[in-house]
Length: 256
Ligand code: BTN
Image (tube, rainbow, N blue to C red; front, side, top):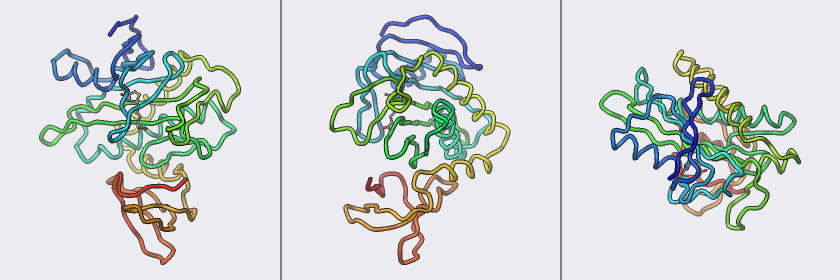
């Protein structure tokens, strides 16, 4: 991979790469090889040759059009159970950025951490944590935001970019600066113990909150409404029979 110039934004050290397999893997390799990446480093790439999505998915992004980055946090004061609130705070930061960029649109967080505008996915987040003993050793927050891309492969479900909504080409450096400001604010909220605020705000911005919709569990469709997300990151659904259910990631599927 080729490294470009480095700089600083809102207290994040930025490492820019022209091309890399995956910014998340790059951070992981640096950590494993003791390459001393520090707390609050962001690795951003113009092009990823093997971008990772959640589960076994890959992340598609046209070179030079979007934001593909990984934020490394080494949140020493946090205990491992805080990983869920950290996930929510990072999703909120991406939400904040998109909402600030497109203030007239209905931006929502699709549990656990996709950012939707209407029924279209504009951003995805892939987080990996290392827990050592009783503390969160490091957290890599991989963020992919579709900014200026206009066409997507047909097999990607519901994709869209910010420029498809704004009708204009957005400046990627300005977008990164804005995103960094929101990441900084939300990270600060966690460190200053504002977990409740984060939980409540995250819940209030959920895609399809309190609306009856179809879901699928092990391939079987059912109707339910989203009531929130628990402190342990599980989706809380209430079925038409009034039954309250809790689901972990990949245990339930949205029908969109
Ligand atoms: C998802 O499937 O929605 C999560 C997508 C996460 C993509 C980002 S792009 C930057 C970082 N590096 C990766 O390989 N993946 C994440």
